[in-house]
Image 1 (cartoon, rainbow, N blue to C red):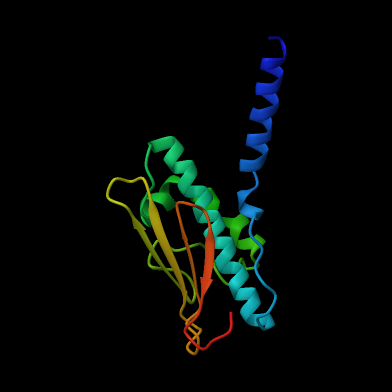
Image 2 (image 1 turned 45 degrees about the vertical axis):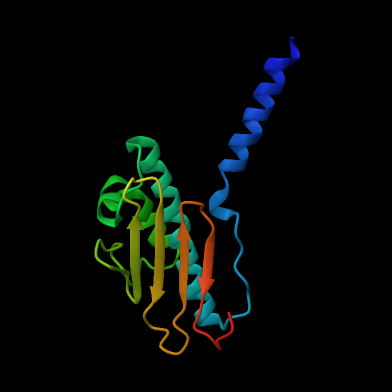
Length: 152
């Protein structure tokens, strides 16, 4: 009987440690050219940050948020630290609340009607040949895509 609280505490600690690192859980491939790879890393970093902000807002408010309210609710997530971490602070003063969130990146964020889910598509507008895009949803899994006949 005395072991139950200890076992429960250890299990709870393990669960908390697992959920503290989802931002670093996915690794992107190294197959793209260096400029493409750098842009793809920015997209993945942006979506990791967006997923984290959505869950923070859901815990506070009880539902996921569309882009403008999310940015207003969690401005620090997309502020100077995000820009500096991704090497964007010299080129960008802030993440935009418009559909072009960063130069050359178009965001489509759709929140389900009940607020319990969302779908995100982040499109690289500079990739005219292969139309690179990164996607995520409330599962937190980040996917990358390109047009048919383009190597990912």
